[in-house]
Length: 344
Image 1 (cartoon, helix red, strand yellow):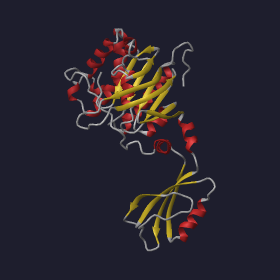
Image 2 (image 1 turned 45 degrees about the vertical axis):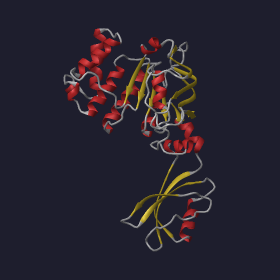
Image 3 (image 1 turned 180 degrees about the vertical axis):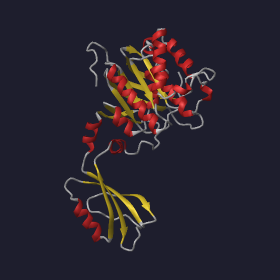
Image 4 (image 1 turned 90 degrees about the vertical axis):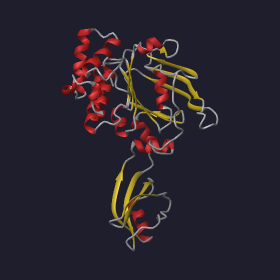
């Protein structure tokens, strides 16, 4: 991680940040608390990840930090500027990329659109054109540089949106699901650009939300896990993994003595869960975490004593997804309280 200048304010700092929405009339009930007192400090030069299930408050948090939404209470500062009282100063210093957002003016070409946005931020002409062409190459749209936006595919539009976010070379970049809907190769190339952009510009900062654990693992210096508007954990990916370690993760392919599997075997001292069935082989995956004090060979012996036959064994170390499930209690794609529509 590049070393930023020591005299700069944090890139992002929030204190007791709250946002409450009135419940939609169709649902009835009381107010919905999208953020419930969030305290976060993001230093200059960090790639900071925000992970949470659907409805956890991630997008609400980013909208407040990018001055698109007022907080109900608490405070938030970006690059040393208050997001309410100094919104203009915040907007001059940030970029925003949102997966699935609209792509600008359809009658403009890709190159014209990026140039237009560079001028909104006051980028000098000679610098702007060079940067526009560089970004077009980065996102793989050189052949479409003079194509109207309304003729681009969905994936191409999303890549153009990515370039648009960087055209002002912001101090703080907010990326809300930036690779949503992109193919694997495009997403990999854009992650590489983000890492290079950070290396070449000490003091630049990225706040990233993503549903892709591998993306968070690859890019982020630190991660915050948020659910129901509260930050539940915040540390480096390696430190978070250490916090939930408790043995290896084991997946067995098992079959019953009669060639079928009908119910989960009771393994002494180990809560196990069924995974995917394999009907063509009459087997099923069995998943569990092996405690440090237990030997796998003993577990295999227990299963044999219960009449189960082990057809295959796979082990792995703790992943970021394991951390997430341990902290939140459910998977990243499981629905929490849905985030209501937001507006100022």
